[in-house]
Amino acid sequence: MGAVSAVLVIRGAEQGEGAGDPVVAVDEFLTAVYGERDADRASSLVCSAARDADAIAAKIQEVANFAGRYDTARFRWTTPRVDEQTADRAVVSTRLTMTTGDERSVEQQLTFVVVRETGWWVCDVA
Image 1 (tube, helix red, strand yellow):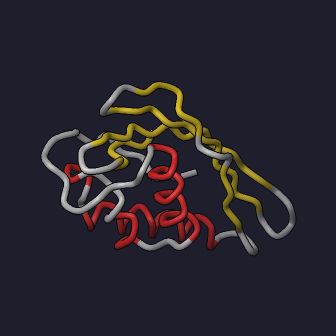
Image 2 (tube, one colour; image 1 turned 135 degrees about the horizontal axis):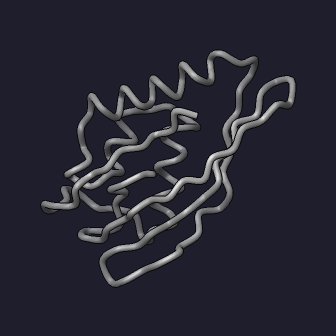
């Protein structure tokens, strides 16, 4: 599906405040990428190591290009679920679905690594 995916290294202190919990961090990230297609917003939700504005913008453009090939493509996802969690790291998963105007759909399982420093930040998407 060309979903946002990259291996991102976790390092460095965050600037600002992250989300209140790992599920909120992932949901806000998904909204920025698939709902709003807003690279600046998505960048503000990821850990410092993942804040490559050009790479994030390119992935969002890839999502937009993919969706643009279909009549009225819409994205939705299941409520993110914490699969593993420690005090400073969580693994969160969700199922992303794209539906087209003629009711065709494609699904993809996504897994996120979310870290806590000054709140929760998305650092890896697979």
